Length: 215
Image (cartoon, rainbow, N blue to C red; front, side, top):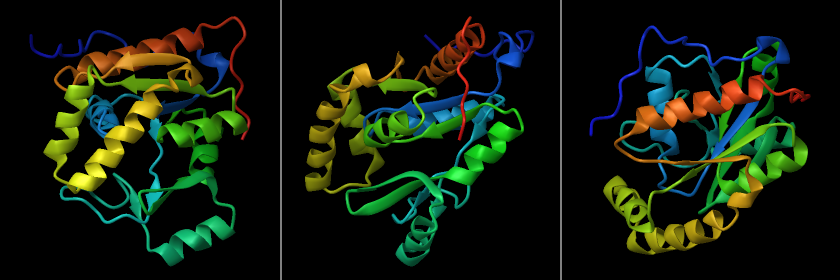
């Protein structure tokens, strides 16, 4: 079955009471679950969010763009931002550093725009300690076999690195209870995943007791 195409007659803004204020949406899941693919589709469908660009010291992969997929920094540049307290959270993963720019989030929230941050499960846990009022969404692979095939097709890890990522993914999936919502991330049904994210945001905008994000 083909991935459903969004209906242009359906409101492009996730609904509910916009007076609730902007949300901070933390999108996470194990490596290879398709977080980048989901965000790319959300941008293609012009979903009305601010997408935070993570800073990293890892090498740019084929097809990636600096400032769009990541802010690709040297270790010295990353360390300077870290020393200046510019990251909401940061971590070293597989020898590379990743950090979420704090000011980018604050600026978007101040404009009244819902913000989406993509982090690994460790990063989501850190953010939940700092900002428990954020909305936490876990992307779940349809199966361990599907996830392994996605990682293999990336051709970006050695056999040893692939084994490490798969082992870590099992531990990350065990932490799903940390999150508010879980979505099954089907690689060929990305529109459905996007619709589900929108539905979560709509539900959150309809809460009797709204989430108030203070950064």
